[in-house]
Image (tube, rainbow, N blue to C red; front, side):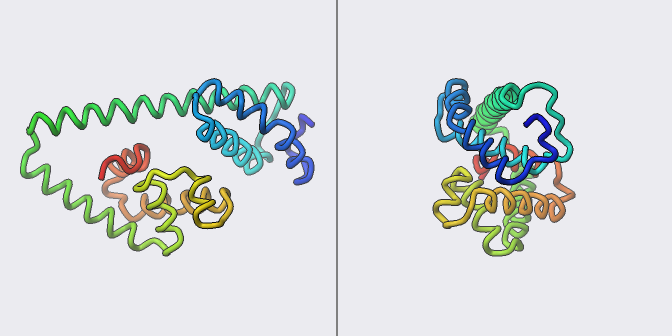
Length: 186
């Protein structure tokens, strides 16, 4: 089953069911958070399915999956470390009271523009975005709360982020930080 490009949905489901638990256990060993581990593995399978036409697996599928999970876990840990570093830096900056009036005005303007851009999103997409970025819910939790699939949550978040990037193009660097770091900026 190394030729993932020609795999049927039934074969893919069998692949998922056959490796899901062991990959979650492996990811949990690395990230020490079962929910996060499950989200990493689910995301991996979603990406694998979506990119199957471009994915070439030159070793065993099991080896490929383990490598991909390991890399995703390490990327997640790196993301969390960067996020924590940014939060610490931001806290030091705010504590030092060196925020000028001009910077505060710009931040308020940006906040207003971001909220306006979010308000322009379709209602369902907006709700999913807010639950993820402002309330800090994981995709699985959002899916359960709204009684939709995790895939729908992922698609709606992707569409929301694309819309916000377009809407806030003039603030693309700041928007990238906000999307990357999540709700902690507000």
